[in-house]
Length: 386
Ligand code: CMC
Image (cartoon, rainbow, N blue to C red; front, side, top):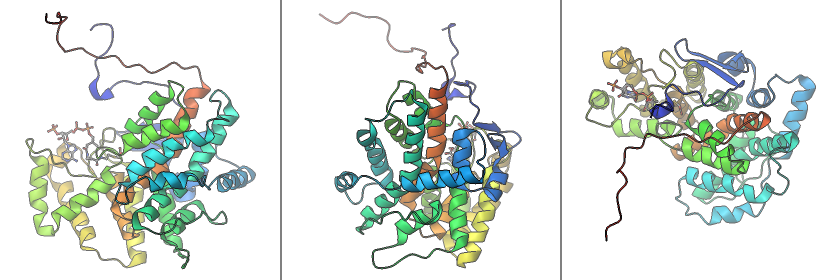
């Protein structure tokens, strides 16, 4: 006490310097390497944003071609990883499988990994960006008992992922360009968000010099919780629980009750207190996807009515609780036919670039192990009886 600051929840503690992402929560600004997220979502694409986050600058045409080519060349996973999948129950949550298989990559690439070597760190980032969609789609295929689909290196990143999810050896999934673009936008909008719980976890795990694949597995574990990345899945579970528009007032009431732990999933944000700039783009994308698919799903109607009611309710207005990125992403993913249990996996795939960019930044500059202190409130020294 007196020697350090007590800051539960790290509300006012900066644990590092970073040049990757800037957020102004009051003004609803999110910049990656200086570029506004809405411009990146509209004009760029996910792999270009990956390059930007990792390298600090947008690639020129040659650099982009080379980067896309490198990522395509790393999409396959080692055949022995299939045994890892087979060790899981078919009904295992895909995030549980992802924690396991991404951590297991440590055992495949440890030999050539010197974290003090910039080139090795770069290759490790390429491997992770490239393999995450393959690993994620394998989780889904395993859960429904279908054969794993190999990546196709002649397809774009988002298209390849959707193909590995929905194609079978008997039928090729032809995906509409609107859905490919929407998927790519979901990846882009989730790519990085400075020192959130999972990124801080990756930095902290990385600060000990741990293997980067293990660090990313730690990030996946931190992301899984419903207060963080698990919220997109929780939004859909909540909408199903509400079940009918007539039940919305009851759930709004519960969310406002201080004695009820229930919260409106997909609402509120620690940093954004006016609006989440990602959710504006996500809402627009959501409208495009629903129009393209001609979907009229009762859950989607509940979602838009819930949003209307909450945005007018003084409780939410006074506390500045707005729909966040996870509110709309869940709706888009559901409309695309992606099962709810895969939502957080898709968040993890998208955020991998943010995690590895922060890990790389940490190791590219002078650093020391992270070691938070505590305020001890336990028993005073006492003697063992007898
Ligand atoms: N529903 C009802 N009340 C809420 C909600 C909500 N979703 N979020 C915050 N509040 C209330 C909270 O009860 C508190 O009220 P009071 O001042 O009367 O005690 C006030 O708003 C401030 O909340 P807080 O808990 O201090 O806010 P926080 O910054 O610690 O939590 C949050 C941020 C995102 C965890 C929280 O808003 C939440 O649990 N939201 C629902 C889960 C969610 O959608 N998470 C995704 C976040 S965005 C993507 C990501 O980061 O992964």
